[in-house]
Image 1 (cartoon, rainbow, N blue to C red):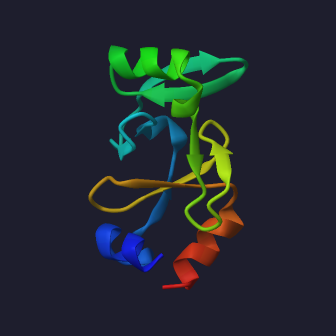
Image 2: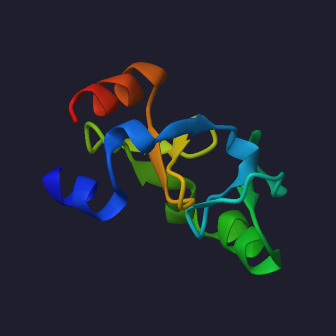
Length: 104
């Protein structure tokens, strides 16, 4: 975890953001709505047609690792946090995010 903090800054810099403002392929928070990509009853978000295609066709693009536990989470239902630079981290739930912030 220490490496993650050195790359992404202090845990206290991270804030929960709306999923619809995140390109789930580029892992970037844009602070504006992205293109919705419905897949199997869930909605993912991409910033362009290429990202839309990737989310539609690549199951691995629709999952991430919880930044606290390392367990796989579905990006459509994940709690997403962003830092001021727009980097994002995914969490299975708000409790995991809160524990992530407290650990720093």
